[in-house]
Image (cartoon, rainbow, N blue to C red; front, side, top):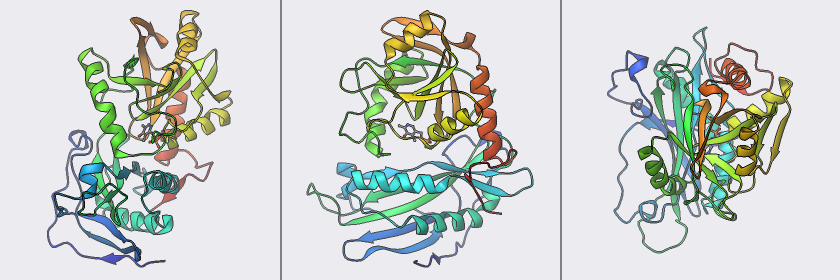
Length: 356
Ligand SMILES: *Cc1c(COP(=O)(O)O)cnc(C)c1O
């Protein structure tokens, strides 16, 4: 395995004092992990170096054709002062699946994990303490050929930057209002929906803006073919509690296979709930709501962990869920998962990688 070079910084930033004011994704630390790819040479020169700007030719491939993928995970501070990561291997495995779809050369997941552990170890003083706070980790790969021809780049850069983040919820788990999008779609069968590709986000922004103008927090996407089946929400997978059962759309190639989704399914079964992955039509969700059988609904994703849905609107019809409060199953799953992530509950599934 390649060694990881270390380039020391000569100046250091001031660390934020008040975690409540850190927000999300605005502050970055003193160092980053970087490695480069070149056809013939493979991935090489893995290093930790001072956080700094990249120099780019205006013709750089990623700027024109969007050959870019990313990941999102977090480092958590335990009460004993130690630091831990949640399922980082799953993020790098998914990143390689995204890479393959986007014609980006695969990287060695062990080198990436080793680089990440070393980066977090070096930056450990940047990991905030306090429930809900974390060091957000953003691995990314971009195509770097300075060339306007339309083909896969011959050179790439892999980098990991880290960002101290405040609690996602400043006033408890507030339920969100969701607009079921019946015009735009996010992804289609055979497309790149399952990949964490940068362009998926660009494609989703307009619908999110329109929904926000109407007072909704998020857009729920339906399938790209018939606009009949539930896919997911913004940057979260969707779960419903219908008649006591946890139900989520099955992975079909256009849904992003969330690591939180997978963890919540495992935990649901472990806690004794029935959990189903299957095709779920929006009509079924609304029929359940009209019949008083839609007990709870929530999104799952690394950023919010679990985000309860208070209201769902589709083609002019709105249904309230759980009386606009967080439901008991949602609450239990949230408390159990965050308990494991912060080290307050035992790691029963081998999900935790401790840094110290
Ligand atoms: C990242 C992401 C998710 C959530 O995935 P996690 O691994 O749980 O963070 C869900 N949907 C989309 C579109 C995403 O990009």
